[in-house]
Length: 74
Image (cartoon, rainbow, N blue to C red):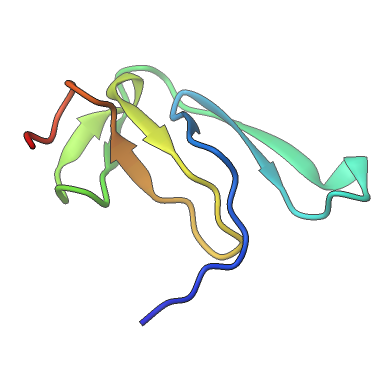
């Protein structure tokens, strides 16, 4: 079981911000993925194109999620 105490809002999987320490601007990193790079999703456990996914940055992991209408079926 994992407990996540820090999270940011969902961000596009093609360009997202990882903040290690809010008080230090040098510890902020932009991560970029090409739109057609496949990424593993946490919701359906399938490989999806980055342009069809979002990420949610936790302090210990960066899970990818399908965008609404672009992968998982409700």
